[in-house]
Image (cartoon, rainbow, N blue to C red; front, top):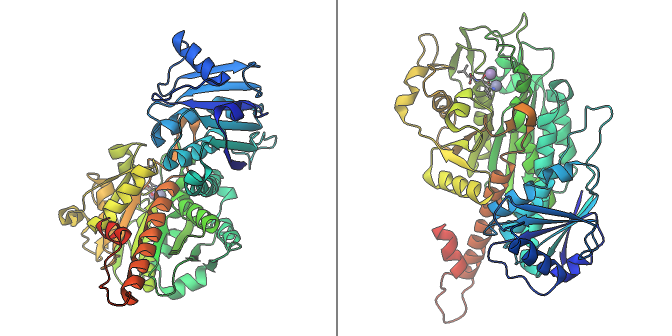
Length: 512
Ligand code: BES
Ligand code: MN
Ligand code: ZN
């Protein structure tokens, strides 16, 4: 699907020939003299429409506009959140075959963040999964024009929104594919395809290389299946050579049966989504490739199935992780932390500025936070704050959880350095405490996305979260380091006879 940004006022938007003209009406909007404004005023006066979020008024073949359909959308206060909600209410219309070309605009000018949210919501509302359907009806919407009064003002946020759509849809596609259409080798091929974009490189490690690295915990999970494991290593190099990278580690269990500690049959199909952490890393690289920001990012994905065959790891088995620490595998269903711990150890070789792992790690996190916020853990307050902020701004929110050492008590083992599970209580936290044993002194954050990466029930499917959160975090880091670099350059070459003053932007960056 193509998005275009175009200078349009309401009168010009009304003259656009298309299948649908959607007009966002905020509560503060002052209708003008054009025909659409008059219609809004009339409908509001008659009580048929209001600017409250979620209100919608459809008309067909209206004389006021050239479009076949006109939809007025209540957009509340015009915030990114309200605009997103308004655009999502078009979902039923946009998922159908009728609307191929649409124009969307707002009565009052939208802020950049709202424009980005609008683009993403239109994509979300029109998304359809087709890959494994024989008579799939693909997305009908092929072009969406976003009409704004001042193109230059919102251009960068618009571009970010479009790149995010590409990233989120890449993540959704791989999340939604059934496990037999998304094996570890297929995920590796998807990663390789991303390396066609400039500044992205990809290296795939197979079973022999992983054995040589000593990733005993990862290998233990993968030993019960016919599908060979893959360890995917991606690099995006947009920053200076000496600028430390941010490392993203995504859990890539392409199917989680639980292994010998097998899961019950009900809803086990949903465990194809157990690679959504990996998918989010791939989605981030897709978006990075599109946007080309000045930052360095490493992506690591341990990918394998968790299956129960004759060679499968057994409860009580002790394995040696890449870090040298031994682990008693008391429950083979706690496999995510086993593949992640070795990837975290591997990440240390890049001396990253921060390492963030993303994982559908625990059912306990679903119980704690539901599907609204991802669980956030971090061993540094500034990193936690930055991620929390990124989550709010991108409407992909998370909630910080505790890491008190007392939570690690239950991980003690009589036969190894640690067990891989503690009791049922605080299950998301004890999983995080397990991972923390492998991050040494790296600034580290862990996102438990078990509740947010996919939806169950009738709307079953992957959400593409937390690509939005992660990209917003990375873009903020990129602009902060650019500001810091400029400030350093000013200090290095002061104007003669003047003492260099820190720039306004530099000071602001420091504060943030
Ligand atoms: N992939 C699951 C976590 C999960 C469960 C995500 C349900 C979403 C919905 C993970 O590998 C797992 O099985 N975790 C266990 C850990 C337990 C054995 C300590 C869990 O949460 O039950
Ligand atoms: Mn499991
Ligand atoms: Zn799992």
